[in-house]
Image (cartoon, rainbow, N blue to C red; front, side, top):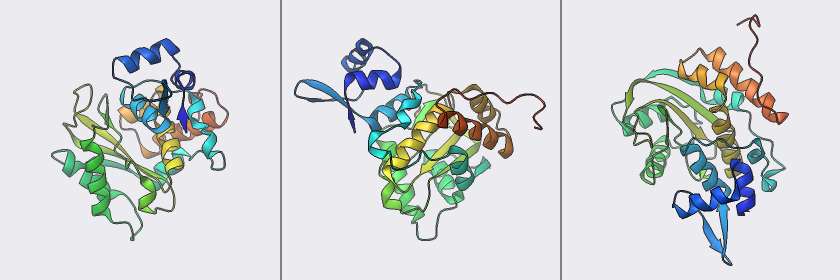
Length: 238
């Protein structure tokens, strides 16, 4: 679905004037139809994620995808796995290691997935800053995976990733999804989660699988009710 200026401003929580300024500065990807700016929801989300800009929870409500539920972040992380001390000396070898640890069906060509991820990186780094990268496939439907998954990989040593802030990457979230709608909504939720203190802190300290999944589950519950996630109370059995 293409968005107009007002809709883009609402999703990013800024004024329409700010949207025009970002377009003029050639920061925000846009195209023109009948002398009016329009924005691709996918490109808007990818840009906001790379720029570390908060997105409204309303971005999960794509009118074109109302028949499909928003993928659960906790379930996607369980499906993709949380992996520690992943080795690699550069972007290509780290992405190779990431693809290798993903529990993909046998019919998925991992070599092809790696090539597509590298091709996506050639368009612009998916390093979003603060040591985090979200490599993903632009057209996930070609992979024919049964369900969306996110592989969270903590690297053995930080590597140069061409991130906007120039910092090396130490944490990777690799997204694979069977549909474009599910892919965008999962990317939306991940971008939202990384702006929530509890989840971001658990990832930053490379917490346990249980801790990270619990934080993700609280994000899922909060998004379902369209409210900020409540922090875990002390004494909750952690």
